[in-house]
Length: 66
Image 1 (cartoon, helix red, strand yellow):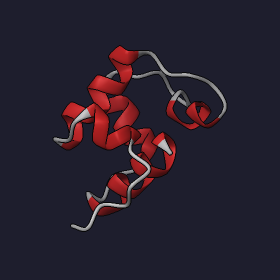
Image 2 (cartoon, one colour; image 1 turned 120 degrees about the horizontal axis):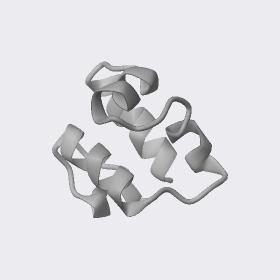
Image 3 (spheres, rainbow, N blue to C red; image 1 turned 60 degrees about the horizontal axis):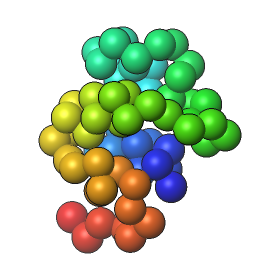
Image 4 (tube, helix red, strand yellow; image 1 turned 120 degrees about the vertical axis):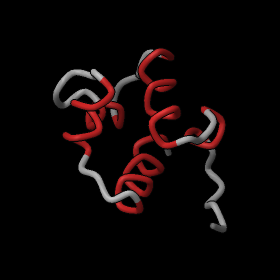
């Protein structure tokens, strides 16, 4: 769900995942691997702050109504 939510936020901004990684200081290709591995809480926090959302919103399986 995390990666799905990040992709949705990227498409709304619009920004690519690669650009998101560069602008947040997260390693190249790291976010794409979150589909199969667990991210660090620090990196999840960076993404949440970048988009102005909470960590809970990033992890939520509920589709936002905005």
